[in-house]
Image (cartoon, rainbow, N blue to C red; front, side, top):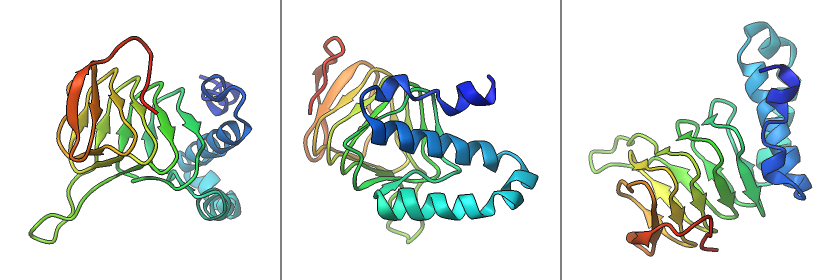
Length: 174
């Protein structure tokens, strides 16, 4: 994959959403820079600017070491927090207020971070916390708090999250 196609791999997923396209372009550029030590040194001011602009000004925390597949869509990106150890598959959707990360365990240590499959649609204000796995083709409803593994091809809602049923088509809970 050439650098141009790499930088624009999320453009189609964010069609009509300039903010989503901009944030994903800037994120992919940071990831590209992060691959090469020389680029990290030369582009250090850009790395700091990214952190200031995207994380502090826009309120979208997508750390440069984060692993995300192609086609990530950001709908109404605001107050979005994704831990740097999260692994996310292709063609996922994140909405405003989503938190994905580790949790503090009873012994004071931190758990691992979630592993999210392909084609996962995450509703507004959902929280996915802990060393869990979310399968492919899952829809997570708005406000859901997911702390346990979720199998593929289902819809999850509630606090604590429970499986509502099999995923229906490409519809989503908003």
